[in-house]
Image (tube, rainbow, N blue to C red):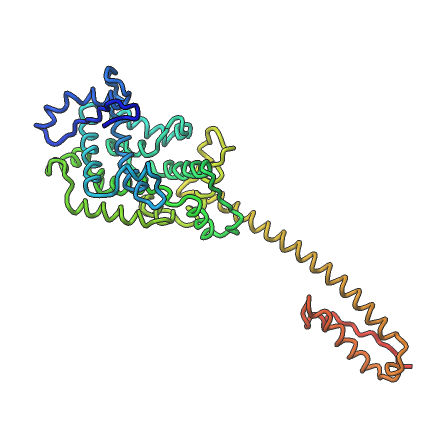
Length: 396
C-alpha cells in the first residue's frame, strides 16, 4: 500500500487461526497494534492501542456493510467494501482476534468495560469529546460479559439519533416540524426525509451481536470455541443469515423499521419513537452545547414528555388559528347582517305604488326571502331562518 505522501504503509495485523498458528503470530501483535494506533514503529505498546485498533477495524467494516452500499453513499464510504461473504469473514476474523487479545490481556477487557459503564452511568461521557465514535463503543460489548445490549441500549440509541441529527444539520439538511401537525406518522416521515437510513450501522452490529457475538447469552469462551471448530470460519447458515440481514438493511429507509430491529424485544412504540425524534432534533441543534443531566434523557419505558408537550402546543396553535378565523367570520357576519338589514328596511320604506297596496304578510315573506338569500353565502339558511325577526310594515 502507498500513502498520499508516497510512503510505504505497514498494514499487517496477525490473526488467530488456531493455537499453533497463534503461537508463532502473537510475538508480532504488540508492535502491530502500537504502529497501527500511533503510526510510529518505535512506539511502545499500551493497552488502549489494542482496544482502539480492533474497535476501529470492526466499525469500519460495518460501515462498508451498511453505509457503503447505500444509494446515497459517498465515494469514500462506498470504497470501504460491499456486503459479501469475504467482507463478513474479515469481520469475523477481527472479532476472533479481539476475543483472543482480551483473553491474554485482561487490561483490554477492563478498559472496554470501564468505557461502557461510564457511558451508561455518566451523561458527561456521552459527549463526542469523551466518546468520539459510538460504533467503536458498541464493539466493546463483544469482549465483555458483565454488560449486555439491553443495558446499553437506553442510553446508546437516543445519543445515536442525536448525533445523526447534528451531522445532517451540519450538512445543511433541515427538519420542519410544522408540517407534521401533531401527527406521529408525519413526524416519522419527516425524519426519514431529514436523516434517511439513520442507525443502520448500529442495526447490523446488533444483529451480529445476537447471532455471533453473544448468541442466546453464550459465554465468550463458548463463542471462541465455536470459531475454533472451523478455524475461524463462520458457519454456512450464519453467513446466509447475515447476508440476508445486509440485503434487508439496504432496503430499509425508515427509522421505524430499523429501530424495531435494534431495541431489545422490539420494545419501542410509535409514540416513543416520536418522542426520541423530537429529543434528537431539539438537542441536535448547534445552540445545544454542554452536558445534559440524566433526567432530560428520554427513557424507553418512561413517559413521552416531549411528544405530549409537542402535541399540546400544536393543538393550542390550531385552536388559536381557529378562534382567529372564527372571530373574523363572526365580525364579518355581524357587519353584513347589520348592513343588509338596514338596506332591507330602507327598500321597504321607499314610496312605491305597488308596495303600498301589498298585504303585510306578503311583504314580510318577501323580505325574509331576500334577507336569507343574502346571508346564505357565509352562514346557513337554517340559521338565517332562526335569526330572522320580521319587520312589520303597515300598508298605506
